[in-house]
Length: 273
Ligand SMILES: [Zn+2]
Image 1: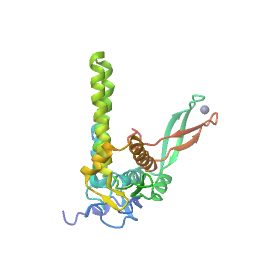
Image 2: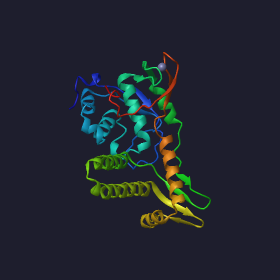
Image 3: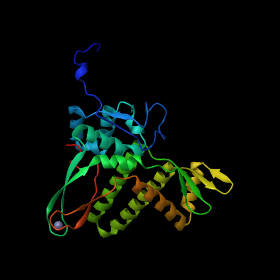
Image 4: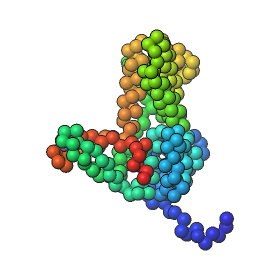
């Protein structure tokens, strides 16, 4: 549509953000422009409707659609490194509704229903200062070369995990003679899912004098590693995940002063309304 007289009333970028990935880990063509200065638009009315569809939110479709709508530098949000998703979503939230978000939380001590005001800009600053380390030292001999998952990969793992956890919960209803068998099967599937996750993340294993990149060899090693080594890998990857999650907000009850933490999550119902 050439020369639409309404064009000057189209939305304009509201803020710009710096991507914590520093533009690394993107496939060619997914991110255009300077990672340090990514323009973010407010959501359209259509975007907001997408977020009110619970299924879309769960399978990640709402996130990818809205990122592509509000961030023209990103052509395929499924391929965005998971490291950047929280930053992009927080930035879109700020561009649409402003930096302040009110969260209600009842005090564990006195029952006061507190309303805490969170400044989301602080969270952008937190992510901006992080660096994803691709090197994980497991012990004196072993180190891993890792990469962040894409949003698509992360969502697939989370969806599968949710499905298995739900199946596990449903075993309560089974008669005792079937329960254990079913539970064992689900635990085996959960262990397999975790292994798949590690294999996606681990690009290479460095051992003295050699680097192993063959995924089948890495799989075989993980399956045959000492429990202790496996636990070390697990701990390292989990602490990495923790660092890259939205930090807890420390608050104090307005009535009795008791300290409490608030965990902000993007899938909480009030994030995009
Ligand atoms: Zn209190």
